[in-house]
Amino acid sequence: MYVPKESQPKQGGGGGKARDGEKGGKRKLVAQNKKARHDYAIIDTYEAGIVLTGTEVKSLRQGRTSLADGFVQIDGGEAWLHNAHIPEYSQGSWTNHSARRKRKLLLHREEIDKLETKAQETGHTIVPLALYFTNGRAKAEIALARGKKEYDKRQTLREKQDRRESDRAIAAVKRKERGQ
Image (cartoon, rainbow, N blue to C red; front, top):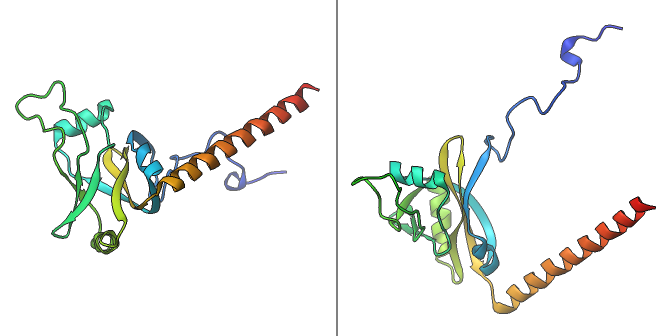
Protein backbone atom coordinates (compact mmCIF):
# COMPACT_ATOMS: atom_id res chain seq x y z
CA MET A 1 0.00 0.00 0.00
CA TYR A 2 1.30 3.45 -0.94
CA VAL A 3 1.29 6.18 1.70
CA PRO A 4 1.94 9.78 0.56
CA LYS A 5 5.15 11.32 1.89
CA GLU A 6 3.31 14.11 3.71
CA SER A 7 1.42 11.68 5.93
CA GLN A 8 4.45 9.50 6.75
CA PRO A 9 5.92 10.03 10.22
CA LYS A 10 9.23 11.84 10.29
CA GLN A 11 12.28 9.99 11.50
CA GLY A 12 14.92 11.33 13.84
CA GLY A 13 14.62 14.01 16.51
CA GLY A 14 12.06 16.75 16.48
CA GLY A 15 12.88 17.95 13.00
CA GLY A 16 13.35 21.58 13.95
CA LYS A 17 14.55 24.03 16.54
CA ALA A 18 14.26 23.06 20.17
CA ARG A 19 11.64 25.31 21.69
CA ASP A 20 12.25 26.76 25.12
CA GLY A 21 9.61 29.35 25.89
CA GLU A 22 7.10 31.20 23.75
CA LYS A 23 9.36 32.64 21.07
CA GLY A 24 11.54 29.55 20.65
CA GLY A 25 15.26 29.13 20.41
CA LYS A 26 17.73 27.63 22.81
CA ARG A 27 18.47 29.30 26.13
CA LYS A 28 22.14 29.36 27.20
CA LEU A 29 22.20 30.10 30.93
CA VAL A 30 24.99 32.43 32.07
CA ALA A 31 24.11 33.19 35.71
CA GLN A 32 21.37 32.25 38.14
CA ASN A 33 20.29 33.83 41.42
CA LYS A 34 19.46 30.80 43.59
CA LYS A 35 19.39 32.92 46.72
CA ALA A 36 16.42 34.90 45.36
CA ARG A 37 14.25 31.79 45.09
CA HIS A 38 15.14 30.96 48.71
CA ASP A 39 14.61 34.43 50.16
CA TYR A 40 11.54 35.48 48.15
CA ALA A 41 8.17 34.05 47.14
CA ILE A 42 8.05 34.57 43.37
CA ILE A 43 4.75 36.11 42.24
CA ASP A 44 5.31 36.82 38.54
CA THR A 45 8.27 36.52 36.13
CA TYR A 46 9.23 38.61 33.10
CA GLU A 47 11.85 38.33 30.35
CA ALA A 48 13.70 41.58 29.70
CA GLY A 49 16.39 42.56 27.25
CA ILE A 50 19.52 44.27 28.62
CA VAL A 51 21.43 47.23 27.18
CA LEU A 52 25.10 46.16 27.30
CA THR A 53 28.43 47.33 25.94
CA GLY A 54 30.63 45.09 23.78
CA THR A 55 33.02 44.14 26.56
CA GLU A 56 30.09 43.25 28.84
CA VAL A 57 28.73 40.83 26.25
CA LYS A 58 32.16 39.21 25.83
CA SER A 59 32.53 38.90 29.60
CA LEU A 60 29.04 37.38 29.86
CA ARG A 61 29.92 34.80 27.21
CA GLN A 62 32.85 33.74 29.44
CA GLY A 63 30.21 33.04 32.11
CA ARG A 64 31.79 34.80 35.08
CA THR A 65 28.93 36.89 36.42
CA SER A 66 26.96 37.14 39.66
CA LEU A 67 23.42 38.27 40.44
CA ALA A 68 23.57 37.64 44.20
CA ASP A 69 23.27 41.31 45.24
CA GLY A 70 21.27 42.45 42.22
CA PHE A 71 17.94 44.24 42.29
CA VAL A 72 15.72 46.07 39.80
CA GLN A 73 14.50 49.61 40.29
CA ILE A 74 12.03 51.67 38.22
CA ASP A 75 13.30 55.25 37.69
CA GLY A 76 11.54 57.72 35.43
CA GLY A 77 9.49 55.07 33.68
CA GLU A 78 12.54 52.91 32.90
CA ALA A 79 13.68 49.67 34.53
CA TRP A 80 17.31 49.50 35.74
CA LEU A 81 19.31 46.51 36.94
CA HIS A 82 21.55 47.50 39.87
CA ASN A 83 24.48 45.65 41.52
CA ALA A 84 24.72 42.83 38.98
CA HIS A 85 28.42 41.98 38.85
CA ILE A 86 29.74 41.48 35.31
CA PRO A 87 33.55 41.45 35.64
CA GLU A 88 35.76 43.42 33.29
CA TYR A 89 36.72 41.66 30.07
CA SER A 90 40.26 40.33 30.35
CA GLN A 91 41.31 41.44 26.84
CA GLY A 92 39.47 44.76 27.09
CA SER A 93 41.42 48.00 26.79
CA TRP A 94 40.40 51.52 27.72
CA THR A 95 36.90 50.66 26.43
CA ASN A 96 36.28 48.27 29.34
CA HIS A 97 33.19 48.72 31.51
CA SER A 98 32.85 49.09 35.27
CA ALA A 99 31.80 45.83 36.91
CA ARG A 100 28.79 47.03 38.94
CA ARG A 101 27.30 49.82 36.82
CA LYS A 102 23.53 50.07 36.48
CA ARG A 103 22.15 48.58 33.27
CA LYS A 104 18.93 49.45 31.48
CA LEU A 105 16.33 46.70 31.05
CA LEU A 106 14.11 46.62 27.98
CA LEU A 107 10.46 45.93 28.79
CA HIS A 108 7.11 46.92 27.32
CA ARG A 109 5.48 50.04 28.79
CA GLU A 110 2.58 48.01 30.25
CA GLU A 111 5.00 45.65 31.99
CA ILE A 112 6.99 48.55 33.48
CA ASP A 113 3.81 50.24 34.74
CA LYS A 114 2.52 47.02 36.25
CA LEU A 115 5.86 46.30 37.96
CA GLU A 116 6.07 49.85 39.29
CA THR A 117 2.63 49.77 40.90
CA LYS A 118 3.15 46.30 42.40
CA ALA A 119 6.66 47.13 43.69
CA GLN A 120 5.32 50.14 45.59
CA GLU A 121 3.12 47.82 47.70
CA THR A 122 4.62 46.88 51.05
CA GLY A 123 6.86 43.86 51.05
CA HIS A 124 7.17 43.57 47.26
CA THR A 125 10.37 43.95 45.28
CA ILE A 126 11.76 43.15 41.83
CA VAL A 127 14.71 40.74 41.74
CA PRO A 128 16.77 39.28 38.87
CA LEU A 129 16.55 35.48 38.66
CA ALA A 130 18.80 34.65 35.69
CA LEU A 131 20.93 36.01 32.86
CA TYR A 132 21.01 34.03 29.63
CA PHE A 133 21.40 34.23 25.86
CA THR A 134 18.51 33.51 23.50
CA ASN A 135 19.23 33.62 19.76
CA GLY A 136 22.44 35.54 20.47
CA ARG A 137 20.75 38.24 22.57
CA ALA A 138 21.36 38.75 26.27
CA LYS A 139 18.21 38.50 28.35
CA ALA A 140 17.40 38.79 32.04
CA GLU A 141 14.64 36.93 33.82
CA ILE A 142 13.26 39.22 36.50
CA ALA A 143 10.55 38.52 39.03
CA LEU A 144 8.09 40.42 41.13
CA ALA A 145 8.61 38.89 44.56
CA ARG A 146 7.51 39.13 48.17
CA GLY A 147 10.00 38.56 50.96
CA LYS A 148 9.67 35.32 52.93
CA LYS A 149 9.66 35.18 56.70
CA GLU A 150 12.14 32.91 58.47
CA TYR A 151 9.50 30.23 59.18
CA ASP A 152 8.50 30.22 55.48
CA LYS A 153 12.11 29.51 54.53
CA ARG A 154 12.30 26.63 57.01
CA GLN A 155 9.02 25.20 55.74
CA THR A 156 10.26 25.37 52.12
CA LEU A 157 13.48 23.57 53.07
CA ARG A 158 11.49 20.92 54.96
CA GLU A 159 9.20 20.32 51.95
CA LYS A 160 12.21 20.08 49.64
CA GLN A 161 13.89 17.56 51.96
CA ASP A 162 10.68 15.48 52.26
CA ARG A 163 10.30 15.43 48.47
CA ARG A 164 13.92 14.32 48.07
CA GLU A 165 13.47 11.49 50.64
CA SER A 166 10.30 10.23 48.95
CA ASP A 167 12.03 10.26 45.54
CA ARG A 168 14.89 8.22 47.01
CA ALA A 169 12.45 5.70 48.52
CA ILE A 170 10.57 5.32 45.22
CA ALA A 171 13.86 4.86 43.33
CA ALA A 172 14.99 2.19 45.85
CA VAL A 173 11.73 0.26 45.39
CA LYS A 174 12.06 0.43 41.60
CA ARG A 175 15.66 -0.81 41.78
CA LYS A 176 14.59 -3.68 44.01
CA GLU A 177 11.78 -4.65 41.59
CA ARG A 178 14.20 -4.65 38.63
CA GLY A 179 16.63 -6.85 40.54
CA GLN A 180 14.09 -9.63 41.08
